[in-house]
Each structure stands twice: as structure tokens, then as C-alpha cells.
Length: 182
Image 1 (tube, rainbow, N blue to C red):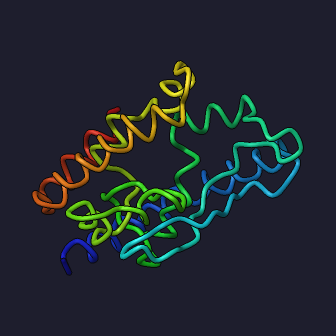
Image 2: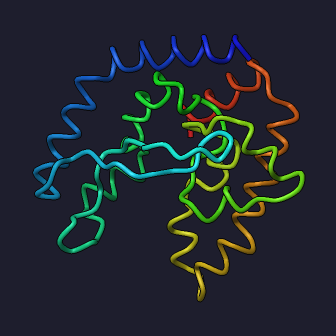
């Protein structure tokens, strides 16, 4: 998928050039808001189950461990994800692909579901569009972890497998378009 990689490089390069002032401003505001450096780093499971460090704008105050009002805005607007353009430029992620997860999920897949790990994790996907309000959905559940593990995560895998079999540049452009207007 050389075309996909070239697209990712062009998209992330120009995205970073265009959005860098906004990203820096958001990091500065988050630094003030969280009273700590406004960039968040976390290990995530990437392509072929290889761990990589994802970049996000910090939304949680480390002292209270609660999402701030500013952080809530960043999460709802998905602006906290903009630093992942760096991950895309580095080749750790793609613009479109399964959202990267923490250890204990994608790295535990079996059978046909392992095909999902052949894909680079993405900034957006059909699954991330469907579950854009995942946090609010989980808050409504009696047992959020069980709901995630039994309902949401298997559905995300199903959607990501569908993408695996259908993926092409045109489909990526459709998913990007849907993401922009969501």
C-alpha cells in the first residue's frame, strides 16, 4: 500500500504545517489547565502488535485525575488527537485505520481477528465514527468495562475487519470526509 503511505505523508505533513499554530496553542492552554505539560504520551498497540508512543493533548489533571472542562471540550471536538499527525508522519499510524488501543485488547486477538493487527492504527475509522460518543455511552452502563468488552470492542473488531477487506484510497477519502463533517 505504497499509495496509502504517500497519502499519509502528504496529509500529515500539510496538516502539521497548517495546524501547527493551533496545536501549539492547544498544548499551551492544556499546560495551564492541567498545571503540567500539555502533551500526553501513552504506549499503544500498533501494527503487528508492536507498541508505539501515541501523542495527544492532555485532557486530565494529573493531581485530580479528572477530565477538566477544557479537556472535555478537547475530547468531544477530537482536537486532542491532532498531535497524532506526528505519529502518522513517522509511519506509526495512518490517517485511516483502527484506532490504537491500550495493551490488553488488540494484542489479545485470535483467529481471523488478528488481521486487524496487519493494519496501521489510524486517526479515524468507521468504528471511531460509530463510537464517537463512546465515553458518554459507557457512563450510562451499570458495568462499563463489561459493556465495552462484550458489546463495543467486538463490534469495533467487526467494523475494522470489514475495512481490512474493503480498504482502498477511495474508501479512506470517504471515511475522512465523514470524519470532517461529524
